Length: 343
Image (cartoon, rainbow, N blue to C red; front, side):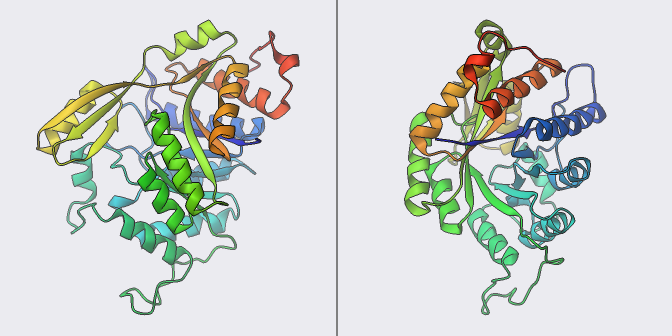
């Protein structure tokens, strides 16, 4: 089964650098991704985070669109619980008017930060962040100019109206999210790099395909490619997914035990912390391609969004290039045993 490849970049701040450097590297990677034939380049939303710089995806997207020519640029994703669906629609209509046919709007349910940043984002409003499904549905109607006559916002128009609407995706890691994406007619992105449970992926893919057979199913995976299997595994290291389970039933995934403790303490309720294997796909580009092909065939995946959490700039860039070269050429025998990185 054929599939496309995209990239998710969180604008990581590497040791000894700062946000300016991180964002310039994001721009550089987006331009390289376009050169290497990737179909999409997405940026994320994280708040009050010292190790990543991507707090405002719509602002960064506008800059990336101006610095590239053909690759689709999007959000992975906008954390809709914090924002007015109308304003999100306006933002992405402006972007789509500037670059028709090149804008992706990915929306997510996660907070994108600790409880304190959520409080700051929602300070002074009546928003409690618990109406995601209602917000996602309203966003769709506003983008499509199909708000019902009986709705309080009947007649509202998100201007400017672009020549081509942004392609919209719902990001999630469960069958419930997949069902909502299908119900809304959105593309669905399963975040396997957050939830590495194959059973969860299987259930989500089945739920989405049953309800929207022709929808676009994307799986976001953590990958590390290197010239040798040994080097790839060394670069991947012993990474973990850290989950915080609150007594109220809500669970979130964070990047470190320190963040997990901060989240639990700021949430103001009893919590438990769980460590899970990150389940990165680490190996030569040939090995990575074999795993992606197996996932694509098993779950009818249309596309993969690659997330590479290597804490070294050059090796991270090389990983994306190695995968793109093998995927675009599809000439395993020519590359096998000769995987060189050309800067």
